Image (cartoon, rainbow, N blue to C red; front, side):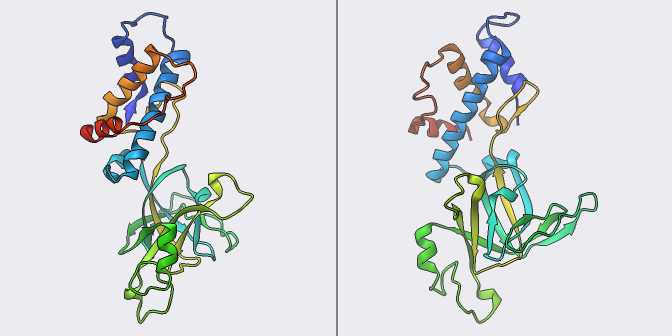
Length: 252
């Protein structure tokens, strides 16, 4: 994690503004850091799309949780305890431990998926492969592929897959309505999900920025650029170039 206060102090030093009220925390430093935060999020998304960045980048914002699927073998994103940025892995039939210090979640309608907040993931040996929408349709009848949903001789021959979050409700425009589907069907069963939470917006200098310290200089340079040369319409503020992606890769 990166300290917002540390980043602010570095920016003030670079601007030669220590002890000056020319730049204020509320109107200058914090907005500049949030812009840099959003820009770096866009760079990471682009690098992920090109398979140029590994999951180790998310080490400071990675979480695991045990969830119950609904009777459609789906998992709703609105059951996650934090806003999801990227799904890192999904495991079937995990071995878990009960944390007695946490409350037992209520059992909802089987049509709903939910977060088993009192369970801790210990071990799992059956993983799910991420499939595209096209692969999802092609694999359903192929017994040699992940996501095949026909009869198998034994459970050891089941190769699970999951489909990226999709909004199955016409009326639900929010990402909170999106669901992850698992196949072969795992209806009302426990699964463990590993995910990276979306970086939070900075509210005050006591906050931390949800990126590893290795990218401090990237955030510093972008925030400093913004605070020094504010762009009126912000048209290209979050634009990502190949040079940006390469710079991130070099840092990591």
